[in-house]
Image (cartoon, rainbow, N blue to C red; front, side, top):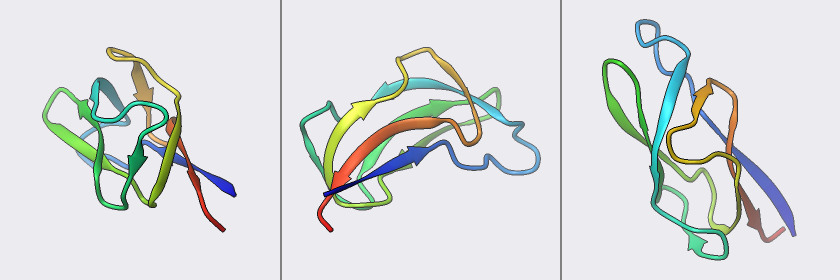
Length: 82
């Protein structure tokens, strides 16, 4: 088993480099598939979701609702086979 950190992606040139956690769609211990929405994020200009980049088991949420994160900050950790 290995783990993959899910990080806040780049928000685009005009969106700044911070976003606020609105809500998580999964809880630790739940299975998640690649492409499933993991978390909803909010900026001053937009609301968007961050999908899981891998299929596996969500083992840790690295932020709480209403936390303000910067691009590259870890949102969650997913355990994957192989």
